[in-house]
Image (cartoon, rainbow, N blue to C red):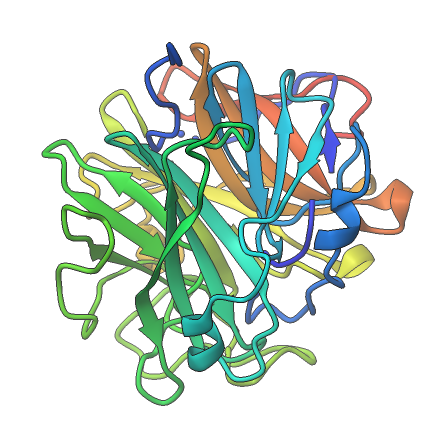
Length: 372
């Protein structure tokens, strides 16, 4: 996670190992503790640019209103882009011109660089969750803003901030309140998956209004971890020169997508935000209930180090990750960022078509010339 936004639409076939949050309304009339520091903020500078086919992004999420796609990603005030065709992107104003006051109070030295948002649509409103944090620490919180429209030209366009949803504290919570993703189960109950490093990825039930948690933050279940034996006390040790407090449980960015009878939990493992030294990669597991357990293709629980590889870097892309998954116009897409070897490891937006094999696991169909 952590940085600003670039679209590259690839070109030959490649098989991977995937899956939907409700992000599209009825047709209109329809940072992280990962050891790599966020890139410099580009929010105001981006607003002065015209349409682009290559936008630099981290942690992209997307939705569609009418005939327009809207992309939200890490950046100053939350970076926003719009597109009619998923190829040419127009910069929009950030969600927050100034840092939310609650975040300034909660996070020491917070300067409005907001990480890893999540966008969803529910009962006439867009719900935009976002992460505020102190790098390398779990001094973090997840906030929420809503809007009735994403079209800046609409007279009703206005982001309303609802403040903090959940917060983590050093020495008190062995998890990190960043990287939110919302999923609604079969009974209509909303859940938030979140987390990065420390004890792994967590799941918490939300109240029906989706603005607060519906259960105690104590003893939240771990739904994914790189730790193979959860009974062993303590976190995995940090490696190399990575933040000691975060430990070495290099997993983050959960995204749960419902496809047919399964909920698919995607996550990113290893290290983002290191440019040419990035080792980010995506894994997936699935469950028949939102609460899990999520099992990979071999039957190993993701909470015990499992996870089927979806995509990893190569000589052309140093690392790929922090993905989201959507269905637009009856087609499934994998949306993520990758570190481009041809551009000195700069992070770029990637959008790939998703197919499914006969056993119900995702298959990424990349388009030629993308180096995969």
